[in-house]
Image: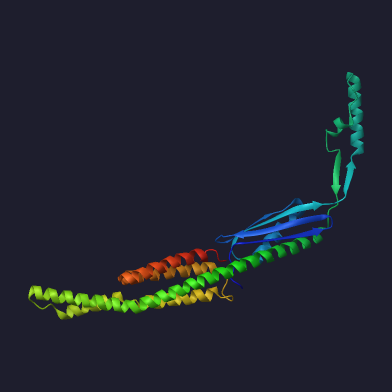
Length: 295
């Protein structure tokens, strides 16, 4: 399944006999799949099928389907309730005569009830539902195509940023041990200076033990390995054959990557390395924003 964004639009038209309809389907970001369907009276029965079709095609996003009747050329049959209208006119005439009022008009009688109705021939419901389903399918095809095109653009942008993170990890991997070694030398120098000032030799075993602990706390190997594993998972998720609901997984991986880079920043106190990690965190924020638009 191709990677898709959650933003898309599609439209189509369909006709059944004298009735012509237009369908518009649009979607925007949402953490789950939400569908709202707006139908004209002629399609009152189609809300359920419309929701079902949307859920077959999409995983996430706020989706709105709007259908409008654009043209109705149905023949109109005028039906007059003649017995009721005749009886009403006779009664009004009798009352007018009794009270010496002018004779009632037909317009007055027609205002008193539903004596005249207009009937349009309704199309076969099965035929109408088939045509609606085909029309909505075409609209969703266009919407999905737009979401896939945007998804491809998002994937390319994220891939470029992941390459930048790879480069930053390589820099940290190279500079980390150098920074740790430099700090160790400074600590040894301070210990030697302190021994000289005190005129005594400190417990070398204790000092060595503390240096080993410091070295372990400054080692960035685990963080770099985990960060690279997360990047590999990120790339796998972006691939066309990746799993469904990839946006949620990408959001999780972004958080994990941010956690690793935060730890790297606390371990590597060199100005150059810290600057590179700050840049990495800025890139991760951009990746997070892009991932939140992926279905």
